[in-house]
Length: 405
Image (cartoon, helix red, strand yellow):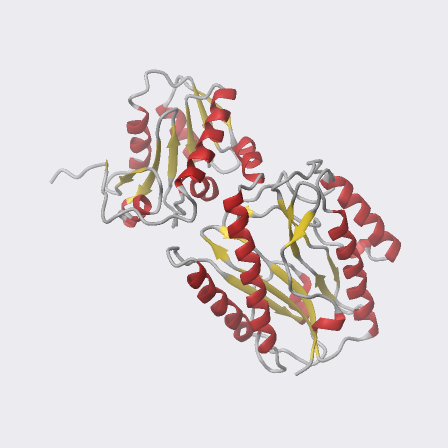
């Protein structure tokens, strides 16, 4: 039996994608402008975030390579046979499936797509994602080509959101707030972080399905942390039982077609001592000032430096743990990050209309010290022409979030 190295399969019909055909075409036009500027004959994408951004398809790797090849007139995803036609149904472009019968059929599929091009002098790759092994194998295919990094160029394109993207991000912020409200109903002494987190996740997934009935549903999650577990912003939930006086960290993360949003709030169970209230209120002062500073024309590093000075004045700068905010859009704990739009000392990006960014100061006081725990608030802001819109509505601070049961 002769088995193919790769093949086409259109099983079923194309489904409704999260964005319009015009939206995907506009993204491609901007990508091809990068190709013209950098004199590229072809781009090979390998990352989940860029393949999803340009095609609508979010792959699940499980150790297999996935790709998307863009030329001046074609765009084609390359997927593993284990996924059958789902990548074709879930993308606005063509698809080639490679098989596992022989090693490196993925690269044979790339070569097939490129074979109708007489010259491939310059090829773009994502240097922040492609592995050394894959880079070496692509080099062996195109021995006479020069390779160029396009990761930063594409990141800067993704930083400016379209109206369609902003619409989905606003839905995400709304759904994150719903998850937070459900979690509040289930905070009780003796309940576990896991039990409480499940309630928030479930209601968010149901709301996503209601609001986006044609989507795929994956990766929505909650991190609900208590006590010592609040010290890290990305600490997973555990089976720890809540105790009276615990500091709590509520974190809801709805995922809609690869688009991440977040709600993060500090809470206390029943009561908070004076040292804890002082630390909490300090972080809130910085949070409020940060919300005021986010506006069109502001520079990321300037915002960071001013908030550092405020923390220093209040006596808590030594407890700050990470940057003050980051971009939103095609983003997940599995993939993506628009590192050019973060509120850090080394980022000089100027905020522009249709950028989306968070304000999320955090301080962490180590165990054994007065007020021990991690304090974090998080809001999402959309940069407009003259101001910024805060799309997070969940309240923050001691007057709202000392939870009485």
